[in-house]
Image (tube, rainbow, N blue to C red; front, top):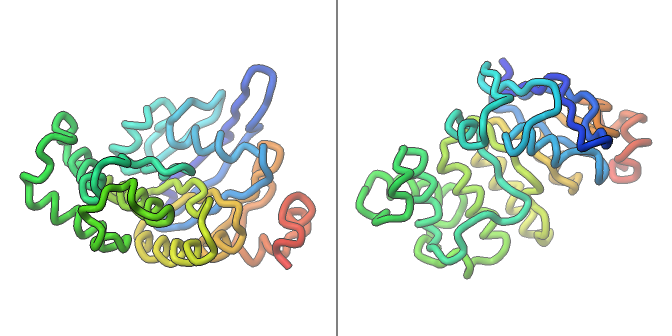
Length: 248
């Protein structure tokens, strides 16, 4: 059963047609990667799916509900979470307080998001469990700004997990990382998203082929192909349009 469906999604900015009719689906716990050259419309598609701005036409369904007109906040309450290309954390707060903010928000404590967060032991235990999953429990009291870059990206994923998502939109999860940090991130993402569906935008094809169950190739605003990684790797149309020597 599909947890997310995009149906003939189009987006025009004035006379510029960025998306010309995108259709795809993501199954429960499936990992779908969306690839394509710069300017193909990947970020625009993510913004529409996450609710940052509306499509010109078409429909987005999440958990069998039409969410095309719903805000990002409403979609997050339904279980859709987005991890951004640039770290999106509270730099001056501790690692544990960053995750606590998300846990408290998910629990409906929005009006006390950053006020006396240590009073509820259950929320702290939930936050510590998340930090353990992303390998940051030993840094629980460290200010986020003092973490290495790869650790900040891990913290952002921890904050994303704090929202108890059924679907995560991962926007360039390894951007700016060293090769070792990238390898560590791949292992962590595989481990912590086993039971969560993901849609991934990523330029590093090693990351794509390590994480994705299926790959959708976005080209000139539409899906050129969508299939298993090995099929995409050998698709001549995809090679001509995008992959080229990267799949050799």
